[in-house]
Length: 294
Image (cartoon, one colour):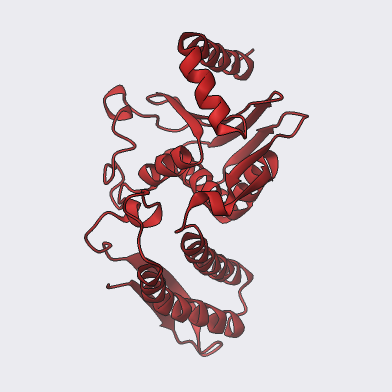
């Protein structure tokens, strides 16, 4: 696999022999095959651990070179702003390494990797991980968390990947506008609803039904895998998902974390499907009302 091209352009001056002028990181197209299946394999198509190790090895080789180069440049430059950008590269490289570790750890059965985790803490962690991108794009964050925190039985590394994908997509959608990212949690004894809302470009009605298809993207440099992976992760963790969007106004991702006893939840859905659908619709309308009050 051809990995990453890391290009450093240096300018030599009399005052400082090594001033970084430009740091750019571009990725070549990933190898053929369904990366979604690799990241979140179905029960009938699990990848062997050595395949994950091989993929991680191929990515980590150039990644370690990038990190080392950034660390060396940081040691020789004196400009604080340039050091700040190098810090972002270093943090991003470490995050990629962490993701590789997480992907490998969740390649087995989900049931063996689940635990109870705070929804509010998960959202805060995602915001921290996306902090550099939020800062660079001058995004305003608005949080409206329920006073009563909700703990969910999920695969933590997977859910972090899914939530991060949604947040990153929201940030990208707000390019060119004064971005506002709103995170809301509403919880009861058995259910927690999470809403991630942006005021970006929105999605057309035609494309709204395609956003979870592998390789579908409107981004010039996109691969169309982020949301496909996200949907697979949420389904595997029994998380409901609804998306509402209006072009030129923004998009709402609404996630429903249900009871920890998933078998009981499935049984209730089979017994009272119409009532369950009515409750879900009522909950979504309630969220819209709360968020868009004058």
